[in-house]
Length: 131
Image (cartoon, rainbow, N blue to C red):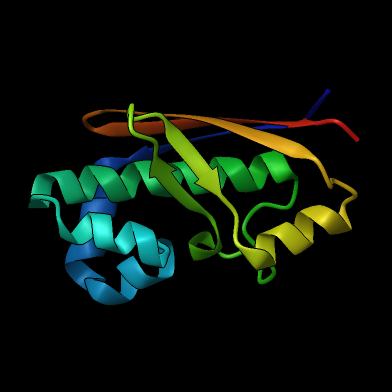
């Protein structure tokens, strides 16, 4: 059963401006610890696209949950990493898991697709629930 669907599109130059203006402060608000490690290993151009796709992805996950980004669910609470084939995988640490449990989702699967074609990045998320 599909619980929720979320999508987001972002203008990559907007993310580039925010990175240039706020640097580490912005990155720390958006990315989780594992994502920051990956971000630091990338070239400048790759970093901007990486952050733009993660930003759109996290927004789409929050929309699929049904809450959007709130004080209970921050962007950095959601991590989007890749498996060994490059498929994006959503990891939700404790705060977001508690939120999902509060809305009675104890068994769920999150599928996400990320794409970028300058100047845009887009994400689409589907949350499937068995309860």
